[in-house]
Image (cartoon, rainbow, N blue to C red):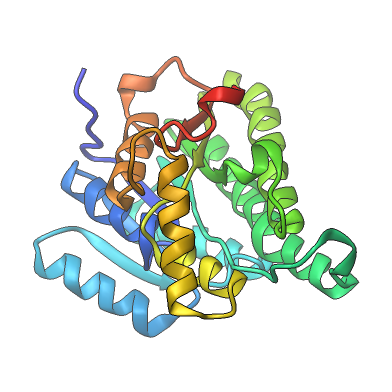
Length: 265
């Protein structure tokens, strides 16, 4: 069965760059109406304009998904614009500090939880409520996690913690809401050629261009596939999870990493 989203309404949180932007284009090309959410208005509007000029049904809504009332408003605006909510891709993430576990501050911890974990719970909370209440009820949620959430990462304990927490939320909700016709899965992303990845590497080496290149080359050497992933490849995995081709799939942590973690699975 081909993966299509004909007639579906999809919300993408964190959709103005990287995997989210690639997903917005791919989902709309697959037949969906897409609500694109991000904190930055200028970038989000630019993506909306670009995709609408290509004939795709995409609308931008500015929202900070770490704030409950803004998430609630985002869901309401999506439903007001398109009539319902069939699919939600909770993909927003913020790059935190890179340091050892004991060197983070309490403020660092709270910021990480708010930006990269509580934000996903806020999105799920209001998405699940909408999917339960609409007619016909049901829908699909995909939460973006990371391979860091599977086994941790040096210098990124709090980020790894937040991504592991997303997996716990995903698996719990999948069991709770299956009887309501709602599937919940996680996209566990490896290294993809995104601004977030490049910023993370830059931060880790103090912005030194030669060191950035060396780190990326070293990372590629660890990837069995021999390269960093393209954002479109992550979006393709999410598309399948949203589609009816995955109608019996819920509670899955789909690892898309070029084989980096294959040895430990």
